[in-house]
Length: 299
Image 1 (tube, one colour):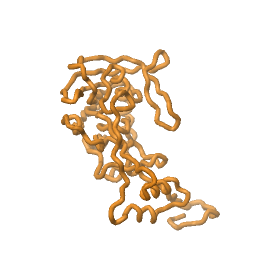
Image 2: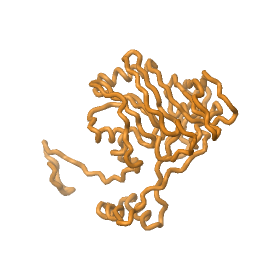
Image 3: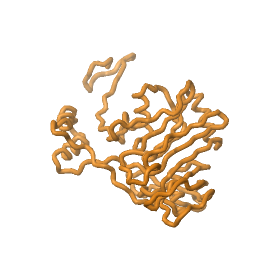
Image 4: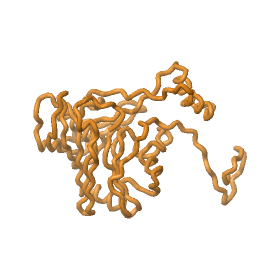
């Protein structure tokens, strides 16, 4: 209370300021990872989110300072409001309002589909050149196939929601049988591009959830010769914390270390709000420019 520790039997009084301390094991991300600022004015902020980073802060999943919103707070952005979201393994543009009126204008465009959204993806395409302007007009539904895991999208019949994706054109072809394609979306369903590309026969090459060849992220939480991780864990150990116990076993060698969440080769490339005069473009990630195997540590 008022920045002074108190016991569990203390009764709070009117006017007391209360601060809670949360014991949290932050999820690991690549060193030096941070969003790229694409646009910054009095009303709007547009950033390029790194792959492998959650959108919002959530202590239950271990993402607070390493979530996009936490990173932006550390960069000095206080009250900001995202107008949409992109999946954790996806990189690219996120648009935010700096006040509720600006957010409302962005959200109005999103709800009215008065927005142009362009993605790029690197897909499996072993059969040669791909058709341009291919409309994938297939309803989707959200399913929870495994308890405790994130929901996924599946092609549906009459019980699904309208979902439309356009495979605009092939941008380049790589020696490994993959191709870089430009994709636009007319709706915004969960995992829409990922599921639609799989349905069309062109799954994202490293998206194991939707027909690609999934990758394992790099193992992390390896101590150095000075034992800094062990010392840190000992200094902040919390009795009864399962994560503390698990990471102690990792350092002792009796448990496998955690892995970085691998990105997928899907990137939110361009966003345009014609009625607001806003037009954003995000730099291309490394996997979109090279035919070499890209390490699964970033987008």
